[in-house]
Image (cartoon, rainbow over all chains, first blue to last red; front, side):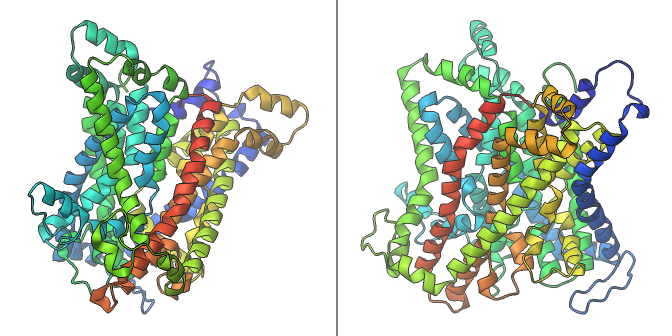
Length: 323
Length: 309
C-alpha cells in the first residue's frame, strides 16, 4: 500500500513545511471551487455508501419483506437467527475452507507466473504478457461454461489429461469433496491481475541487491528467499489482503455452476456465505435477515483484515524505515 | 476488485525501470544453457495451458452438436452452422446491444465524474481535503456485499427498478479507485502550467477542461477500458436488477447463464451446448479485441507520464 500512503502525503509536502497551514490560508474562491469539483463524490458517498450502510443497519432490525413491502421492527431477531440457522454456519465453514485453500494458492501461483514473466527478454515479453493475461479478460460466465465442460467427470479434458498418467480423475462438479477444489481451480486460473501487481514489484527490486548477494555466495534459491521475497513483501501483503476480501465474497462461479439452475439439487458443498446472502435477499426476499448476514460478513472481513495488518506490520519490509 | 488490482499494478510499475530492470540484464547471462531451456519449456507450457481453453472453445464452436464434447482441437466435422443458428436460438444480438449500451454509459459516466472529482482533489486547496481523500481511499476497501441489499432498496425507492439505470447510475458520482488513479495522473502535471493559465484569466473549470483533460487522455482511456470490462463481465448486478424481465432485456453474462440453464438436460433442455459455446466465444471476442487494442495505451500511458506512485 505504499502507493496509497505516499499519495496521501504528497499534497502536504507540496504545500511546504513552513508553519502549519491555518484555516485562513485557504482562498475562499478556491475552496468553493474545490468543493464543487468533488461534490459528485460527496453526494455519491452520502447516498450510495454512508446512506446505504445506515439503511442496511436499520433494515437489519426489521423483518422487511419485499413481497408484501412491509417492515416491522423486530429488535435483534435477525441477528439471533444468524446463530439458529444451520445454513449460516455451513456456508461460513465452506467459505473459510475455500479461502484457506484459494488465497495461498493464488498468491503462490501468481508469484510463480510473475517470476517466469520477469525473466523473459524484452522482445518476447509483450506476447507472453497478453497470453498470461487472457483469463482475466474472459467474462466469468464464459470461464464457468468452459470449465463446466472441461471438468466433466466422464468426458472432460482435464480427466482425460489425468488419464494419460493412469490417474482416474474425480467427478469434479458432482462429488461434494471436489466441488470446492474445482472452484479454486477456476479462481487460480484467473489470477493474472495479481500476477501483474507482483510482476511490477519484481521489476522494482534493485539489481545491485542480487549482485551483492551473489558476491556473498548466495545461490539463486537463497537469493529468492532473502532478497526477492523481502523486497516485494509489500506487494505480496497487499495482494493477500485484497484476495482474502474477494474470497470471503466469492459468488460468480459457485452461483453459476450450482445454483442458477433451479432444478439442480443444490449441492450444499458450494453454498458460500455470499451465495446464501444473495439467495436470502433476492430469492427469498428476506431483506432484514440478508442485511444481518451482510453485517456478519462485514465484521468477519474487518477482523481478518485487522489481523492481517497486525501480522503484516511485523513481516512486511518497508523501504526507508518503519511505517 | 479486479480493476483495482490491475491498475494497482500499473500504478506501481515504474516504466523507467522496465528497461533498466533486473529481469532484462540478467537474462543474457544465465548460469547454464539447460536452465534456460527448462525455463522456456515451463514458460511456453503455461502459455499453452492458458490458451488451451480458448482454442478448445473456438474449436467447439465449429463442431456439430454430437461432437462438442469430443475434446478435439481440430473438429472432425467442420461446420459454420452454429454461427448461423445461434442468433435464432438465442436473443444474442439483443444481449450484445444491452451490454454495449450499459458498458458505454457506465464507463463514460465514471470516467467523466471520477476525473472531475480527481481534479478537485489534485489541484485545489481547501479545508478537510486530506481527510476527505482518506475517506475516498477507505471506501475502496468496503466489501460490495455489505451495500448490496440497501442499494437495491435505494434504487427501488427512487423508482428505477425494472430499468437499466441501477447498472450505471451510481457511476455518475465517481468511483473511489478511479478517483485515486486519475488524481495520480493530475498530480504529475506541472503546477506552473495551471498558475500561468490562471494569470491569463482561465476559469477553474477551464483549467480542468483546457489543460488537465487534454494532457491526461491516456488515463481517461485506461479508466474507460477498466470500467467497460468490469461492466461487460458483471454478473451479480444484472442478476439482481434484470433477472425478472424477458430474456431480451438481459446482458451478455446473464444471457449466457440463462442459455446454460435453458439447454441443460436437467431442466428439460436438449443439451444443445454447441450454441452455448458459440455464444460464449462471441461475447468473449469484444474483450479480447479491447485488450489487444488497449494494451498499447496501458503501456504508452505509463511511459508518457513517467512517474512513480
